[in-house]
Image (cartoon, rainbow, N blue to C red; front, side, top):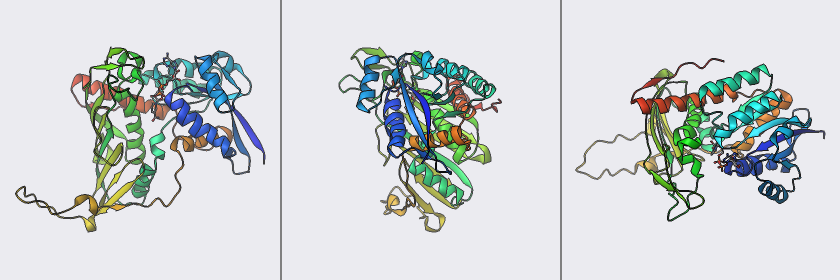
Length: 383
Ligand SMILES: NC(=O)c1ccc[n+]([C@@H]2O[C@H](COP(=O)([O-])OP(=O)(O)OC[C@H]3O[C@@H](n4cnc5c(N)ncnc54)[C@H](O)[C@@H]3O)[C@@H](O)[C@H]2O)c1
């Protein structure tokens, strides 16, 4: 077995996503399984360079996982001959500058979403990467969730007939931090630090809608900051300036209407933290993170509206669970493997910077719609 080592800078490895999903669940898991196999039997072997701001925390993480290569000097790391990929899971606001630096150093770049804070900057990064002939990728993890993979399988198999609408509920209660510690970083709740649920979630909604259903042509959005004051990680109260809920309507090609609620101020009365109901002429489905249930037109009940009588139907029990029929690995890891094969073996990888830029654009237009209280069309984003 030949090993093909590939040097990867992992920046932002002390953060929630950088540590858990990217380092532990993806890159270290890839090493544990013996690398990423290629068709000729070669195995791509990630060699990690941890990068961050705090020496002690980096050393801590490195030692915990038997790693030895870490530094607080990104510029120096980018000049190393054995580094081919730069990965960024930093705070969103720090991303553009670091990604630009990596492109200038001729490194391939993979990054968390959103790619940048605005679409002009995101498109500019896509252009710069193309000019520098480096390969790019943006995390689109939701596509690899078991529930959405099953939904995609139903769509590809023609289960729905003509798809009419998509209804999505995402969210949970994020504690304010006063009487119980909050479970998300406080920067998420400050616009001045790049926070806000629209910037956080619309890039996800963009690729989910575009990849599963159809391109998004217009957006109407209402946002709210329902909780205007929160308490940060250090116990200090602060004004929450960013949107913590977004109520969006997306018009898609083919007349499909998608309504997606995103909220950090909602208590969960669903089976999963995100659920999408898709209604089509031939059947409907409800997909979550892991599960997916369907109801075909042949078994659709015929409710009659009569508030004077109890309905007598147990509607939830009338749906059928879609079987796994497959093994679903961690979505972040699956996408990492695809990106590594893209870089090393030139395999196709559609989730590039331009795709990431379209996600940023939708977030930007959602915010504009909310600010201007109007429906906003989504123009084609050119290279
Ligand atoms: N794909 C997903 O589902 C998903 C989910 C959550 C977050 N994210 C994205 O991942 C990125 C990181 O989010 P997170 O929740 O892990 O955040 P986090 O606050 O837990 O981590 C932020 C990381 O950035 C580093 N950093 C660098 N410069 C910083 C600065 N000036 N101030 C503060 N931190 C700085 C921190 O040290 C830390 O390693 C964000 O861009 C976010 O949009 C993606």
